[in-house]
Amino acid sequence: MSKYDPLKSRLTAFREDSLALSFEEIEALIGHPLPPSSRDYDEWWSNEDPEKTTHSQSKAWVTAGFTAEVDRLRRHVTFRRK
Image (cartoon, rainbow, N blue to C red; front, side):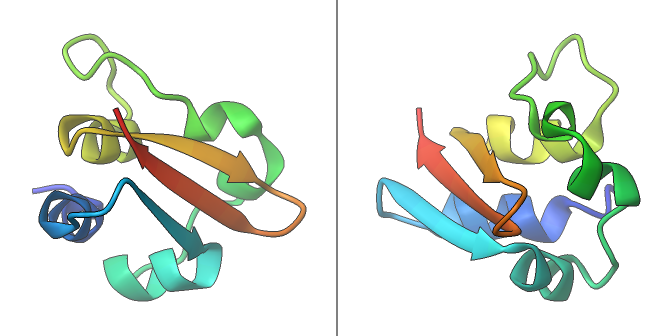
């Protein structure tokens, strides 16, 4: 089980085309702080092939059918349905 499973569940149950969440909302959802790299690098929010990546955060939103678009300065992510 991944610590990002609660995010995956939230996105899987979400029926709209996009969901905007602050970093703080994501942290509350997963019950853990996001790692410093999520605040420092856009690449942390990459939409990677879930069959090839080892990044559990990317697997969470991609397997739920979404892509992530980050605005690190605003500490905000928009998940858009693929």
